[in-house]
Length: 236
Ligand SMILES: C[S@@+](CC[C@H](N)C(=O)[O-])C[C@H]1O[C@@H](n2cnc3c(N)ncnc32)[C@H](O)[C@@H]1O
Image 1 (spheres, rainbow, N blue to C red):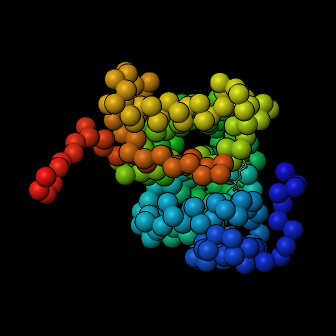
Image 2 (image 1 turned 135 degrees about the horizontal axis):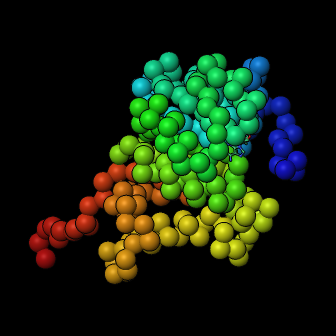
């Protein structure tokens, strides 16, 4: 990954120059603190695009993957004190970050019972950000567990999906394990009205209202899906 490392010093200038974004998440991200955070520059405006409507509200936010605690610290500054922030990680050392900026719980993202306990403790969940193992089977199993638990109006974000093209993560350009094969199933389910096919996942067919694909990031909107209808308006 070294070839993608930013070799300049002006992180904010790089993000503003390339992506036209200078919101306060840039300063929050780019200002060094004790807690290390490592994010791709193009994610910063995307986070703001999808997360800004939840700021300064009691949003329930769950990040999979705590590492050195840096992102949880960033999210606390971004979302504000009213946010219910939880991070989970399989590494027991991450328990050291519990109570710093967020609650941290130790367990695996492919453990459905563990995830259910965490969501129950949170009182529900409005945003999931999967920055965990990036293993394809883990990404799919977390989505299967957590998407049904997500509130209506909530969003599910999976990042670092360049790993979908790498066999070391269970992916590969032509592999059935590639997470974008699952994404295609979600797209098909969104359009089941027109294909006449039985949805792969009936619940998702009723609750996925949008799907956004960016470089290495997928964002899934949850809400009530209605049978589509159209009207012809005006004189013919
Ligand atoms: C990319 S790091 C997270 C970085 C952090 N979100 C940040 O931006 O600062 C990935 C983390 O996922 C954790 N992880 C790996 N396998 C996991 C699993 N099965 N369940 C939960 N966390 C896992 C690793 O221990 C590691 O801390």
